[in-house]
Length: 305
Image (tube, rainbow, N blue to C red):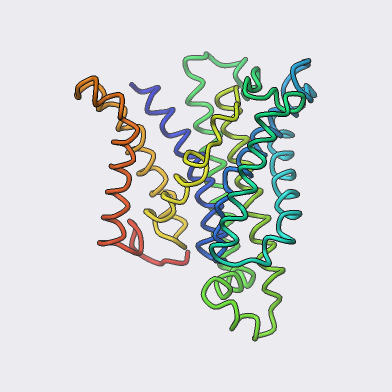
């Protein structure tokens, strides 16, 4: 039971990192990114390819240190965001969101079909797990929880400091009224590009953190529901523009998501086969209650922290 709880905290922390990245883009800058899964996936596969051992199943096998995998994940995700940003950031609102979702689906097709690059639907195995060889496997979850928890804290502090800086105040201005911010002499497109790149780099880091915990990655992990829309739900429940709120929202939504699995022991078999729909119902109810009773999110206090 304790190991299950540790695993819950690890995955919740990884989702919280992705939620912080989305909060930087959407909560502060107003970028409606529906392509979270694309950068999460890019980070995951980049780190897996860079750090995995020799193989003939896919490109890579470079055997680099895990730290190099994290750095590579951030750089590749940020580089792709830079290239995508040139055409995509000319769009606004829903059209920008749809464009990013289409890019996610396109990259997902590449990952599934280009076996020489990613081993296709069979995925990449044998991804190294930091310190796994020097600790008791039964206790490894505690070690990785410290790693991912420290990473979450570092990213939270970095984003909190950034959004309190003059740079962050400009992002807030863009999110609240881009035209007015532009009239004050700020290059809004440049600042949106910076926010888009930095947020995407953090999403890539979240993807790397996931694969180095599981030791395996496949395209099934990156369907839009589990890699994009659940992160949006975490931000909305936690409180858009509230960094501490989105972390709390990430753990709350993830607790509801995994907690619904326990219902299979208490319901008839015919209902248990539909547990996915019941899970979505619970999550929808939580979102509805939050929007109606606490539109600012589950945590009160300063919204823009």
